[in-house]
Amino acid sequence: MLQIITIPTKSLRERSKEIDRNVLLLSETQAFIDDLIKTMYADDGIGIASPQVGNNIRLVVIGKQAFPKKLKVHTGTIDRTKDLVLVNPTWNRTSKKEEWDEEGCLSVPKIFGKVKRWRDITVEALDRSGQSIAFDATQFFARVIQHEYDHIEGILFIDKAKDLHTVDDLLAEERLRLVEAELKHTLQL
Ligand SMILES: [Zn+2]
Image (cartoon, rainbow, N blue to C red):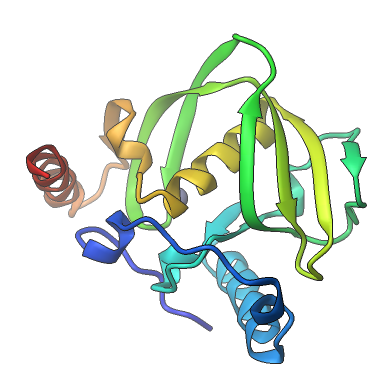
């Protein structure tokens, strides 16, 4: 299992590096991907990005629970029984429609807020075996991809969120103060 990194950690704010296809195919990298997926499940995430475990490479995992009923795949294949690994992903919006919805993040524990995302996107990446994939994503599926993509750009959802709030517990105030400090720090960069 890997350790999830939380704010305030500087590496969460760094742009992650592209992954060479040969490096992707190394058994160490493949083992890392398996560990990353296990960590996502252990922490109840629906997605996870490599920088969240301190490895600043452009690799994200989208949990299969985020898949829509119908996947619109243009290139390659997506096995809907497996979590989707996106390597060096890029995306573009395919409509001007935006949607607000609640998000949270394993790296910002117990904080939630509403984030505006593009509703419809098209995504290109390599899968974990180094094959090119291209597919459409919409609504929740598109949201998870945009959230995870932001991580490899060093962006956190709290940078874009409104109505930030926390679950009601003893550490609630402390957690909000941590977020406020993080945002103040970001503005100074
Ligand atoms: Zn996140």
